[in-house]
Amino acid sequence: MVFSAHGVPKSVPADASARNLFYLDATCPLVSKVHKQALRHRRLGRHVILIGHEGHPEVIGTMGQLPEGAVSLVDTVEDAGRYMPPDPDNLGYVTQTTLSVDDTEGVIARLKERFPNLKDPAADSICYATTNRQEAVKLAAPGTDLFLIVGAPNSSNSKRLVEVALKAGASRALLVQRAAEIDWDTVGPLRTVGLSAGASAPEVIVNEIIDAFRDRYDATVELAEMAEENEHFPVNRELRHIELTHEDMAWVNG
Image (cartoon, rainbow, N blue to C red; front, side, top):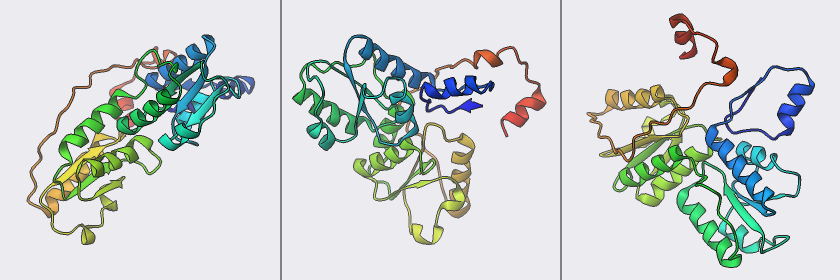
């Protein structure tokens, strides 16, 4: 079994072990960092507020790191205004890693307005890849006739990018998974098109969409660069001894 990058509740690997299954934990290290921050709040006697979207796999995994009742989920500013904690003076918060930075700031501000002793996590919780993409979309969106985000319909960070593009000034913004999903008959005349992608979207699909526009328009590409990403995440410890051949790598890369 391979556990999702979103993370899983503690009960899942325990269940896998009980079934004598071999499993690989592919939880993103940035999500694991949020788990550790939540556990730190708990260790220091704080009730944990998780800012995130109900039902999202990452939220389920983070809440499953602590005993039932130790974490409260808050999604919107309105939720923050209604939330009634067990002890208003002993609270700490963490956030889902794929949220809109601007929206999250509003929720945190409302919580701190109501609960001045609310403690921050030890480090920023929102994924740097999510933050970088949101900043790049803000830079590129103003004045665009159409802004396309490459990502899956269930991808939280991809859906947030659509919202960011519209707020930043794009006339239209759409989430697509492949070039084939673009309805060319309704696109209409275009002068400027923005294009970005969710944190997990393969670059080959981004290039596929660029090629599709070049087939239909006299298109040139300009990059809106905000940051250089050079983080390196090591391979799972259980796999480090395996040496892949060139043929293996070709298969892995699809």
